[in-house]
Length: 622
Image 1: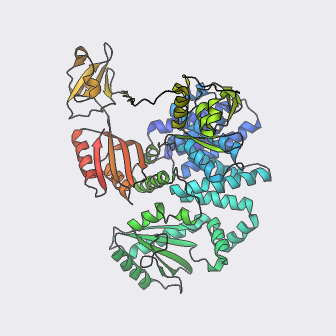
Image 2: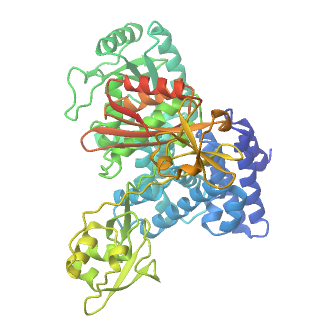
């Protein structure tokens, strides 16, 4: 079968794929194929790389949009595909993902080895408005390590980047399979002898070892079938993880007992010990391999029971814990990435833990598209990360200009700011900076302060300094923006997004043009401000099809809160079109969900169920 046939088969075999998803992959393939027809060998190799990336994304379970973007990201980032053609053929969503991919590629290329890796990974995360661009980067890096035709030096550099930048992000997101693949491929390049030695000890491929884990899960499940609420998961330890453990603990291969392991997650501490009794009664235990971290937690709060048993002629590690312990272990102080020595990130670790909960939920969700809808969560959090000429990182508010950069460095630099270069090009002082930009400021001998600068500067520091120099007292007036956007419902009627009415709401129509009508709730402030002669009575039979509403939830940021909310939404048979979740420093989780519903009755039921979750403080409709 040809590579093209494989890719198009991927599109057809996505079980939950919509027709348009398949068409998108076909269009992306066609555009990429057409682009390289008149190109040379280099571009054809790039296209072969793109085909393999698309296959990897499919194997890893990503949606059709991500697979389609994987086919064109590299060509677009190398300007082989013009922007106009990209937008026309594939649309804004794919163009946006491909743009982010290009920026990530450029930022890593310019700064890897010059700044701290944890800062670089933060900047890369901040650059991804849609996390799918990072997923494509993961798959692309994996392919370049496995199949790339590079010099030894360049290949080693890419392997180091995978280990120090991308694997830690995968770990914190719960993308363990992808993380292991990146780590193993990197080790094979950086320490080929060590990799070969451990691989020969194992004597089996990852695929074979994963099948063994699946067999163990089935067998252990048969012994605890009386407890349907208990969950069993497992994994085969990666070659890189075995290498790390041998290095850190000074152990020989034969002393590693968790090469294959399963985890049993229970509903209570009592159930944990009951399951432990079952395991020990059915299997022979390995001496000196039992530790009860529930009775005696680690200093970092880690709790779980660890034991090892003989299973089919080999040692099998078994961990037993409650759901609360599991979520705390995966996302809290005792998180696995903490004791893997991955650095904490004050900007994104909370947000990454929320993403991980979404990933965990996705593994059991009925809708494969739900994950990527949920991951349209920008990481910037109103901040951008830019560089000085010496590669020092400066954090600025989103939308900042070179003026904000100058004042962030030093007040005197800001006051005397004459002109700026961004990425080597002269720009206006009002130029909007983006993540990863490198800025150089040229100064005058005297102050250049102008009143106009107040409309350019976004940062508090710059605003304060400019006002001080001009002798202006700060204004207490606040600016409130009211955005009213419309979503087409049929040919002449639009559902107003400012209030998102649904069947059951009292509604009013607002004439926006002679023939167009915008549908609002009667208590909508925007509708109330419209002249009476433009307001008309309207019935629900004029506004049909899907209805999107937004709900806001405030809750205690505790283990399982977010998955509990998502589970209710899933069982309510609604489509989640967007998710935004933030955890504040006072352990309050704030979520916003955009969902498609049928009527007000369905919405009321959802609000009631979510409100009954013990950790939820408040839920309201936007």
